[in-house]
Image 1 (cartoon, helix red, strand yellow):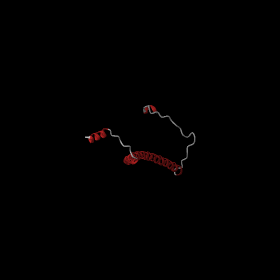
Image 2: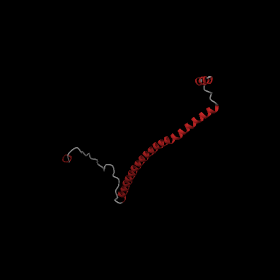
Image 3: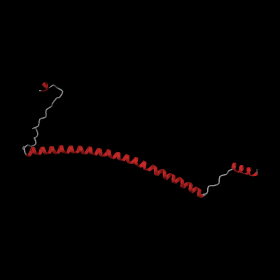
Image 4: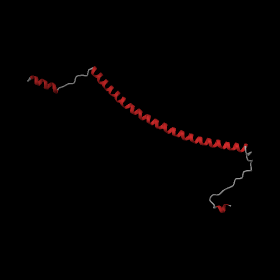
Length: 118
């Protein structure tokens, strides 16, 4: 009977033992390993999202650059062809630049019927 009382007294008056240094180190190490495992799992996903954003930005810049390049090619070819036309007109046809006063500009009105424009 005395033994029962001793066990009951010990059960109700439990006092935790102080943590030993080894236990603290193991606890800290397990938390650190858990954090490393979570970061190892999460980092590739976050990195993939960042790479996706960067890829989309680069695709947008590429499309813009291609559009600018197309416009520049058209502009270049039109200027080149105008220069070629001017050169052929001078060399083959003997044309020259008009002098001042040789060009007369006329006002053309689009809002009047054809009969009234004459």
